[in-house]
Image (cartoon, rainbow, N blue to C red; front, top):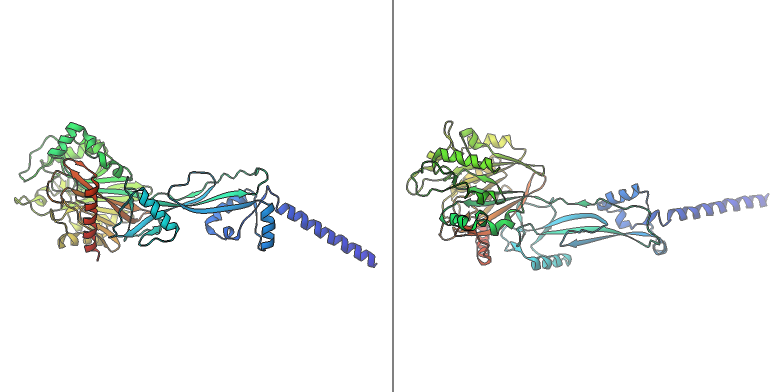
Length: 492
């Protein structure tokens, strides 16, 4: 009896050993299993990828004892995941995830534009964790009181890439599984570009007729075409008809000269300004006709008051945008009353003014989108906004605008962050023939949008020289310094 019991126990024990051995052989069969570290299994960033492997019927073996780890790591295949911060997007195979990181700085930081060498230096400092005063931010972490640094070559935001890749090691033969994985990759931000006043006078027209329409914006094209929508203030009429108003300065261009706009990346223009009716109502109607003909969107003028206040509407990357344009300027030095003569009425074509009783209901109508309004306002040739200028801009934010971007002073003013929203008091001149101190300076303002929210901003300085944009580096640095100083005053 004792022998039978011993035999039965021996057989049972043998079966247990055989079962355990077969289980181990199956568990660690090279073509079916990977050894995965606990750090990988417990990292939520890799959840989607690990789920993908499970769908391929690939099992994971997690070994907690160092002795077993060393044994099985030596003889069985393992999954190795590498994380690295790079200056360029990863273009190879075996990508798991790629996350964009942007460089953010305080509003008045001296850092503005970076060249290739500076970008490499910053990347090296980031990896060494020796970076100060610069924030490395994902699109979700961006904030309006941190502006982005841009590339000197094209004005695009400086972007680094945190990349996760995988490799399979210790395979004695080629895995039979097809590990073609669709990685998670951050989508780029939606970018809007804004520049200031554009008027075609003697020098601009001379450039157009001698060098061709494309010459006007030629040097600035890389800064203009890197955005989803680029905007300027159209401060002239496009027409060859009409009666010239009795005012100090009037600006008009013909259809050929207008090709300088048409051939550029400019796709939206503001038209509510003190020159849009320089040649009367018929010339204004001509201007609207040519803008429509060449598919350039506009807002700020109309055949009547209701039309003039209507915004231009856009849906860009599922971001709904409403662009408004209004005008509020004082009388000219010679006494000409622009607001009286140019404002649209129920029976007269013209521009939209600063009537908040009309603006507020319209803002409320588009409150589910992003509302950007560009007032043509301020005092000419003044580097600092007046109290009335600031009050108007803030009242527009209070009414519901998400950003207020002004032009008219012909010189740059600073920006102010008010109620966590951006006010740019003057972008200066983009292309103009005014030969006065600082009047040849301008800014391109970039707004960065993520999930229906303006998340951050950046700027690029410009200079207009005798009819065309000129990127003179010495002058650009002067413009940067002046702009940062003016902004510091507004954001103590």
